[in-house]
Amino acid sequence: MNEPESPPPAKTPPADYHRTPSRSFWPEPDEYAEAKAALGAQGRFVNDYLRACLRWLNASPEAALETLQSHWPPPRRPGRPRGRGAAAPPGSPAEQAGSADQGQA
Image (cartoon, rainbow, N blue to C red; front, side, top):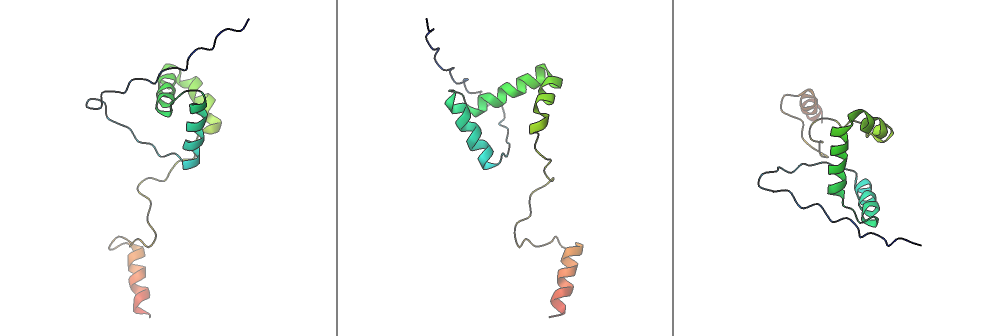
């Protein structure tokens, strides 16, 4: 006999937004879309998944980190990315080189 399917889990109640600061992360667009679709197919949500991962890491750091090792993203460069055509900071070697180039025109 087949057991009846259980209903999908309910979404975790939201945190108290006045007491709990939000956190930000910057996944690649395709990573997020694929994860959201995979979790949605199971009746789950990205926020709840990330919270479950944090709880797993806190409970079993060695096991969690070992399991995720092959999926770990490469480190990002610190600071904000420079935009196209962004001016070099005043006095920097790049700015000084740009000034010298303009004098040769």
